Length: 216
Image 1 (cartoon, rainbow, N blue to C red):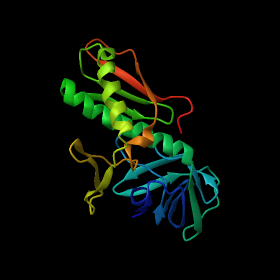
Image 2 (image 1 turned 45 degrees about the vertical axis):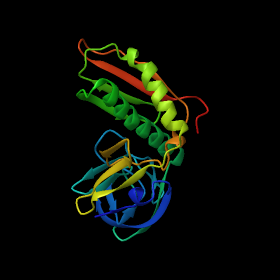
Image 3 (image 1 turned 30 degrees about the vertical axis):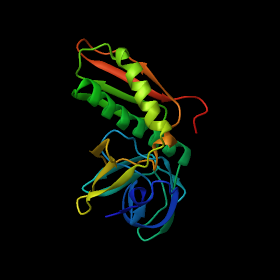
């Protein structure tokens, strides 16, 4: 199985690797910085051996990368894996501000079933099975989230079960949450953001989180 360098160092943007299998347009490598994992955060884009990564999936602790039809890679080839770092860093910020938002929501309003959680390069979308005008929570969310960001708190990210690749993030005194995403080192890296209410079905609520222009 691939060594997941994106967990060992989330700020690493490239690595040298060896192709371990080829199945048409789908390849695996022995180690990789290019993220893919279930849970809402989209996979990294970039290149593998000079070919664009069109898709990536995590299955049975292996990472499978889809390359363009007609790629010329072979098993045993030495390749360079390079991710789009600016895109990854935006995803890391949006991912972690979403994690903090869920903690703050739960503390102030109780936990509600999450029906959607998509961490995209330009925004995060979170939906709930919750009959509320979600905009009414924004003053509290903004106040507490901005304080957590301003306090620039260190974030722990580690394995709770290395063999089964189960990971978590933790801010002591705030929360410890199982999560396999790529995490920031400090809350201050998130920077400015904006919350937006989005339409939802009756009895449900949804919001978007966007980084403000110039964040980065």
